[in-house]
Amino acid sequence: MRLGQNGSFSHDINDNLAIIAQADLGVRMHTLPQAMNMFVRAVETNSFVGAARSLLIDPAAVSRAIKALETDLGVLLFARSTRTLKLTAEGARFHRDCVQILKKLEQATQQFRANRAMPHGRLKVGMGLGMSRRLLLHAIPPFQKQYPDVEIILLSIDEVAQIGDKGVDVLLRPRSLRQRGGQHPEPQGLVVRKLVQARLVVCASPEYLDRAGTPGVPADLLRHTCIAHVTLERDLQDEWPFVKSQVRQKVKFVSKLLLQGVDALREAGVAGCGIIRLSAWNIEDDLRSRKLVRVLPDWECTGATPLVAIYRKTRPMPPQLSAFVGYLSEAFRHHNLPATLVR
Image (cartoon, rainbow, N blue to C red; front, side, top):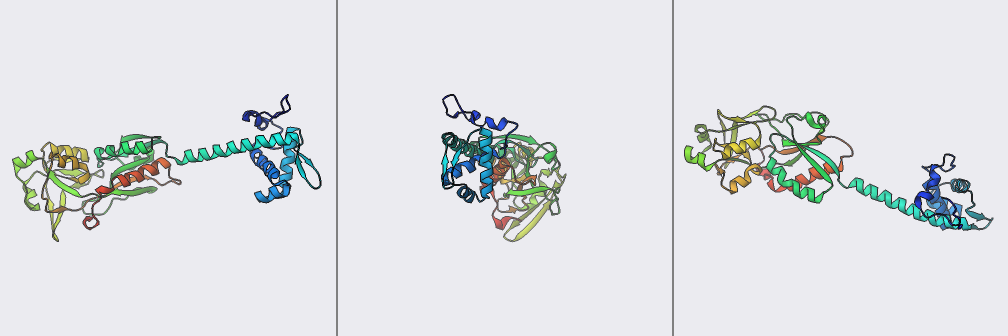
């Protein structure tokens, strides 16, 4: 702040804050806003004691701060007497400028906090082989409409260990189960959040069923070409459990075609390579278009595994990551398997 030729203080905030750059200031950069606030409060309450009381500080601190301001500015801000506290002409102009500066500082602070809270920035999303690209890509446009400042990079990754190592913020994949049950442990320091658990559907193309016939009971699958899925952990999913009216059957087959990745499995089914088993969300469009036909519709194929989001345990959780995981959980909700069928 400097006094102009016309006797008024400059209204340019850069000029008003030029005092900060002075090396010999009694009021330093980190205390200048506080000192200005004390000065404004002293004017509003017409006393140093009133200012101190409103700020819950020692009155001596107010006195020291205002004295430092006067020294730095080279003017008296108050014409002091034993009974009253009256602004000088320079003090009145400085008070007007302080009010404007403090208001802009508060607005800038609030805007910065709001921008920090709003999801923004880059988010690297890893897609495991068991994750349907089609399901995820259908969910991306509505998310980006809701959060336009989030940039999404989709990457295919093969291992959970790649989270963080390759800059992947979150991995989407089915929670893999061992063939005889039990979940594979995830590395320490990771959060595993369930997004959805969908119904398993056994199906095949109309061309395959015309050629090989349609199974009537689970045991008939042994006479068919069933395609086995290989998980990321190299587990072979060649045993399919079924239930119907409390009757349970389990079919273990020998597959002549083994595939890794749900998209490859789906393509094999559509191409007529054999009977496949996939979560309903992966093939709902193909079932509607009759590219695939459900097999054994009276039997429920159990053993569905949830789709999960895996990410590093950090506090606070990055806003863009929190928004993305929460959005997917809500977007996939309608795919959820009824609780009575989760086994």
